[in-house]
Length: 307
Image 1 (cartoon, one colour):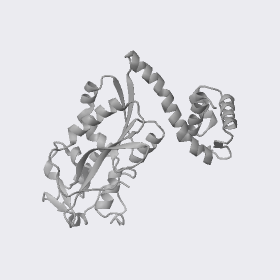
Image 2: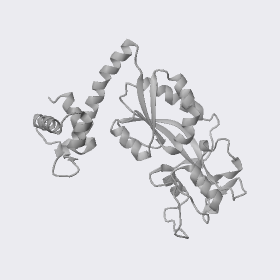
Image 3: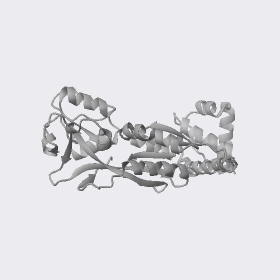
Image 4: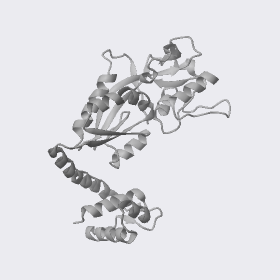
């Protein structure tokens, strides 16, 4: 059968889409990389890459084989990890992908605690949008993703972390509770496309067919900027409950639908079902659950879809 080295070359080429870039990443010459992949294809009896396309793309057979190759490399890498654990000198690298609307409060809240309680883990944190997290999990670039659910995939564990209410930042409104109807004539300040909170806001506030009154608008990449735009120019934006912290509570309003529903989102962790790093990941997850799971469950919460 094909070798581990050939599988690594195949996975790198699939990621880089060009022989030259893939050979540079693998620290070999382009002819060497090309020859090894051709040998692997001959051994398998099928082409993995369609070389007539630029950039390179997988054949149907290649698409079937890539997940298998990823599993092989994942299992192979466990050998070194198990040996280091046995020797007692193992520092695991755990790659965490997290969406910006969660990292904005979770990282400041828990970073120090994680560092203290996970001494044998080097936690590498990267902010990614939801679809980027799903792709990174698929490509084995991260070990755990934290995002708004629901999300179901037979290859991953989906672990509920906590639920959080979504409130309206609308300082111009005097009431503590506002209805969707009362927001209809106010300008909505939205996150950029790809942020799941944007989609949730559009679903709940019925903004799918939004027609803006003027041609000027701004879509922000972070909630703080949107709050600033609301303060300066009016309107409203949606903010997750845990993001508010000790800010002026009176500026944040509970939202209710015509039947009394309160918008919320469920925060989940996605972890590959086969993970040798599970012990450390589980401790990280437990700390999140302890931090944000309220003992008093709120009523009438409606979990919004991010899709």
